[in-house]
Length: 287
Length: 85
Image (cartoon, each protein chain N blue to C red):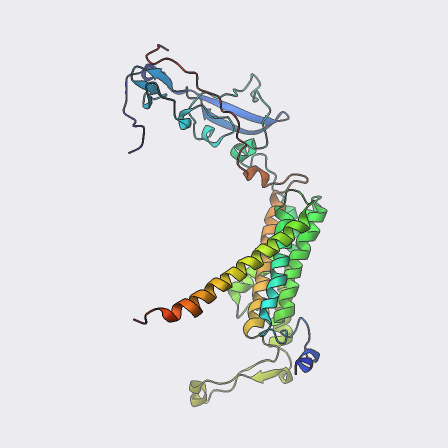
């Protein structure tokens, strides 16, 4: 059982009319970010046996502080979307815009892709050439570093494991990740098939047969001499796979990135600011 | 033997010779290039890019070394002393 029970008590809040639904608009530079139908619930108020919330439930004993979760919330907090308790401290003006200038953290709670521009063209370019998506949207340095990282991973994998580490037939699951690195993976897979698997017969050696194959008189199977084995093949496959996964990250970054703006800063915790204090009333005071 | 293997090696076509013996050295380019790509998209500003890349590379290598030490302790030192039944 929680600290505060929700036993109904007598309060003037019980006689309160239905909860009004009012649209709130947060805007940056006059441009609306998102329209929210927030529930402007009144703040908890004092009654005869304690402090009641908008529904008449006691949230605090008489003479004690109102719990933090029942205090009025900032408009940019997530609680306002859930219908936070307390009046909207930033009511919209007559033209439907917020009465304050929203800060960057406002986007964390209010950005529901109405304003986010998804750049799928940059994503396609980023898949074709890793990092090109960032370059075409103006983040040249970022794109070049990402390109070096992804292509470097892939080429290092090919250097260690050879062409055999990109195999769309024998290592399908690995190839599914590797192909995210772009057409370079398709080219490597084609090269593996054309130069190694279907190469000239003199470039192949018979594989050791099992006892069952020998007993059955099965013909020997031939594989290329460039077949990767053990650590070389494992590391090569892993590096090419990681190149694909990293390029997936780079491509997704190109989709949401705006030049000069880091799309991840908004995920930081909102800065701690002094919350508006609940107006204190003496227990038993009439509303 | 090693020289002959290197002379017969066709880069990007054949697997690297002696990779089985020195496989652990591949962790360094793996960690460094992974950090390059990751930090390129995650850093808000690029002023301290190389410092952060080297830092993340060191963190990855340190984590792998710590994991290796932990597994060595578990498998070589602890497991033999456990009762068989």
